Amino acid sequence: MTSQSQGIQQLLQAEKRAKDKLEEAKKRKGKRLKQAKEEATAEIDHYRLQREKEFRNKQTNVMGTQGNFSAKIEEQTTEAIRNLTSSYHRNMESMMKKLLSTICDISPEIHPNFRHAV
Image (cartoon, rainbow, N blue to C red; front, side):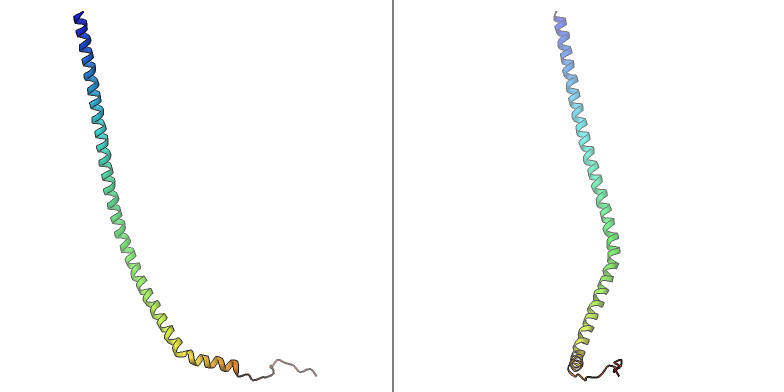
């Protein structure tokens, strides 16, 4: 009987060791999966940053030339406004005189197409 109980004890101990090994293997597998996930995330972040940097460089190259165009257009617009304003101030008084004379100086005349009924 003692040999049977010894055999049972050995089987229980072997079962416990196997269970411990399985738990340890599961823990190692979990650690490896977590580490692989972290490495993949780090690699993805690195790739994303690299692509964003390349995109920003291309965008600044393209937008830089557009920025120059925008500055030139802004400068031309400002110059045109300045010219129009100075022209307005130069010609305002003479135009007002012309308008007032046209409105106020009325000379009644018969229209050339008017036919006098006989």
